[in-house]
Each structure stands twice: as structure tokens, then as C-alpha cells.
Length: 325
Image 1: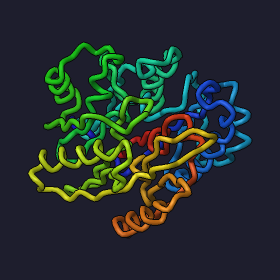
Image 2 (image 1 turned 90 degrees about the vertical axis):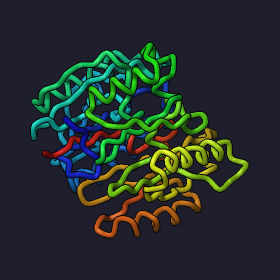
Image 3 (image 1 turned 60 degrees about the vertical axis):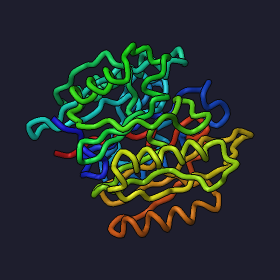
């Protein structure tokens, strides 16, 4: 049993249609338009399963007219597919999944529909699935091809997840369930991250001992020391035997008077492209050039996702790749 890195081929991409009026407020429709751009771009490379409340189906069909996108009726509370989808694994050359518990990050009361979506997706894909009683969101973990899993203490060990596991017990459980060898813990995530600090804003493995890691050169930034510490954790964990590529975070992104918790690490691999968030700041061009040089065989696409980001996440958060085996 093993986890399948995100850069390997995909069979589908799962996405959830934005629906949380309390979260998005006046930008809800803007978030839907942005999501439509993202999924239309993804669908040029891989099939998309777009899960949607029955009441939103007509609206979704008007915005998305694409034969490579299948709309699936499901009861949803929110749109953070990365956190509510199952975690996919390969077992004896077959695709299987684990459905962890989702509790609305321990702070939102409406999550029970989202907590059932993992099983619905597994049934839709007709794959074997097991349920775990551990509360764990998909955006809280990432992993490479060598059995290393990365996460944050601030999210996974947060008391609001109600797991009642020590750090060591958590490690043993993840090693048992996911077939990984090592757990690398970052102390915390970006300041004001509504998820309590998900890893998918901080680091992304891209293969061959190479990792993209969020960084900041702004010593006045509240994230400066946090990101510096994360780089130290990586170098200490791997004895500097890795290639760390620093990706600057956009420091000051405002949208509807809200300072966004923004990171370019929150992107999506398709089979032939990389889809990056665009923040309309000077770092956009710098980051585009970095990705262009790193992935010469992929097309780099930037899409403005400030309305999605306003809701608390970004492109990686609203997508979940289904591996192709």
C-alpha cells in the first residue's frame, strides 16, 4: 500500500461547487466564476467530476458547458474538496481509498454533508475504501515518492480536531494507514490560515528530492520567522541532501477589504499543465518564471482566484486528483 504523488498521471479531478453563503458572502458568485475557469482549464487535460448541490445544478450548467466535466449531485456544506475527499492509495496495483473524518476544522457547525462525501466519491469511482475515525483533512498532508509525509503540528495536533492522539501515536497511525516511512512536522502554517495552518500553503514535493517551499524576504512579515523555521526543519530532516526551491509568498493581497492568506504553493498539477493562482502582485511574474524553468514540459497557467481565496483556500484546496493506475 502506498500513496501516489500528485505529479503522477490523473484519471479524474474532483471538485465541489461553491455553496457556502456565510463564508463567501457577496463574492460567492465571483468564486463560482473563478472555479469555472479553473475546472475548464483542468478539463482540457483530464476528466472532471464536479459535485454540486441539487439546488445549484442549473446555475452550474449555465456557467460550465463542457463535455469533459460531469456534474454529480451531492449534498455539500462547502467547497474545499481537498479536505473532504478520500485519500487515494495504490494497493496491489489497484486504486483504493481511506475516508478520514472531517469536523469542519473544529470550528464550523455545518460539516456533516461534507463528512459523507469521501464515501460517495469512492462509490462513484467503484473502488475499495475503508473509514478511519481520525479527523484529518487532505490539505493537512502532502507526500513525496520516497515515503515521506509532511504536515503541521498546528493543524493535525490541534485540540479542535478532537483526535486525542499524541504526536507519536499520530505518527504510528499514519505510517500504518498510509504506508509511509517518515513524518516531517512543521510547527505551524501561515498566520491567520483558517485551517490552523495547512501544509498545502507551505510545501510541495515535485520529485527527485526536490521540494517547493514557501518563503519570505520581508523581515517585517508575520510569516517571515515561520517560513524560515520550515526551511530549517527540511534541511535538518534531510541533512541538506535535498533541493529546496524557495517560492515567495505574496505579502499584501487585499480583496474586498480582507487581507488574503495567499500562497503560490496552493496550485494544481494536471497531466500536461500546472495551474497557479494569480494575485496581481509583482511576485506573479517571478513565480511564473520559476515554474516555467522547473517544468519545461508543462504549460504554466495562472488564473486569478482572489474570490476563492477570500473563502479561505485556493486552487489546491478546491481540487482533488484521482490517480491513474
